[in-house]
Image (cartoon, rainbow, N blue to C red; front, side, top):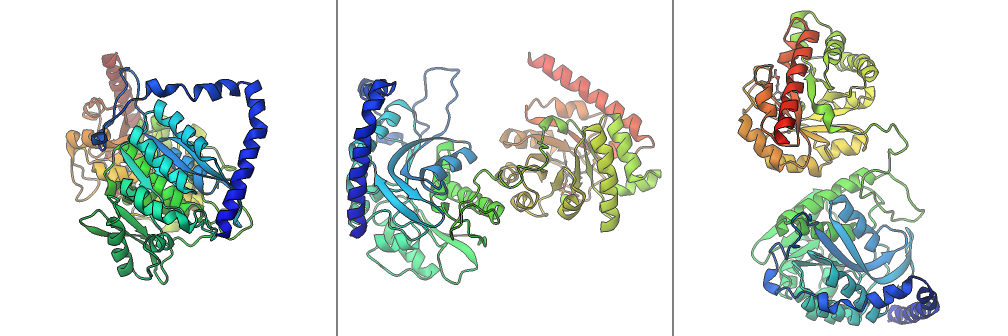
Length: 562
Ligand SMILES: Cc1ncc(COP(=O)(O)OP(=O)(O)O)c(N)n1
Ligand SMILES: Cc1nc(C(=O)O)sc1CCOP(=O)(O)O
Ligand SMILES: [Mg+2]
């Protein structure tokens, strides 16, 4: 109750702040803002609730690109770890546009919440109307809803402007333990908010509060809680077990009304967990906006949060016990070398083979030198039967050669060798370390490639933070044992599904390279070859010849596309 009294006083002070500021707005361009925000009723389109789950109305402009759009209705966190700020970063990281309705302004840092100012209800309504009447919002995600009136406004606005899905993160207590929505709000959460929700994502404390204080101490309790919450009306429930005592991994329970799923992810040891709830819910909203099914959205979001936490586990922001994390996974290494991956480097990808070099009496560095002089645009050291120390030495000398030609050098399989030699990145396979772990070890500037034979593997590579995928075997090969051939059709299917640039591999040589490049998919950026360059007496000549064929094939493809 003391907290609710605090809300009231802070709300009043927000009002007086508005009164002080508004006259200045009127004297400036703010006047037109105040007027404009009231004119758009006639533009409002009513979309039937039956449109839920469909693509929503499209614009009549044929050239316009529909951007997936999440509207977050939540509180501002001055420390920017949680709330509106986390939602914006999560949506940006997931490639989705995010608009915002601010319900409260909090003074907050890594120590805790020092103050809360609730935005007046009519102004929450005005923000919501501004966005929903104008923009094509796919999914609404809610966070801090600090008053009964604000929940009612949300309910009423969603009747007027239905959206495809509503994701409810029933924020009640901050990670620091501060109350963000008082107990009096529980009734309206149960009666109005949950029945509207497509998914509700409570942590253990919130699930317990919504269920009148029922104890949730085990995974079995979480399963029961998910079912009881589902009875309150949301179409899906995700009970988050991050606070579950004595659990080695992070277990969440997902219930869709029919099936219960136990979703596990690694428990990352870090103080930087502030904002994980907001981020997870925003990420679910973003994936839904892009068209995912609910279970797929939840799984992708859990994986994203795990990856971001792992990447950020040792960053230090603020002096308090709960730090923010890095949604964009870009902060740690920004003072380092600025080598960014350029997909056109995949054009002619030379992959070495120690057996072939021995056969022809070539040293690794001579073979690499000839390949880059002949026009290879990226080199991978794929040395399967070499001692670690020798591999490291070879990597260091090849790195000098490649750097002098501006060609990136990647290491196959061995992240340790890539780190120790400061190579430009790694290429990893499906049985190697997952891409997100490699990304966490290597940082954002290093190049990561992943071998993929299916659209699902391509999706995982993208989620894990890879830069490109290697896709094959396009043709049968003697270089890699028991390699499944996927053909040109398989290559095309993966390319079309992949959000990452692709390099084709497997049995490619001078006589079939053109056919590969002619499949005509824009994200196929080149070919990767082993024997066509290295199982030859003169690597330089073979590389030049293959480069010429590729150049001709891409020029012809570009001319045909005009
Ligand atoms: C560019 C490129 N694509 C695919 C592979 C194959 O990697 P992987 O599946 O890990 O098999 P190995 O090469 O380790 O035998 C690759 N190396 N390069
Ligand atoms: C290393 C490798 N990976 C493949 C895959 O399908 O992922 S095929 C392959 C071997 C490619 O060698 P060549 O160019 O001599 O056929
Ligand atoms: Mg491998």
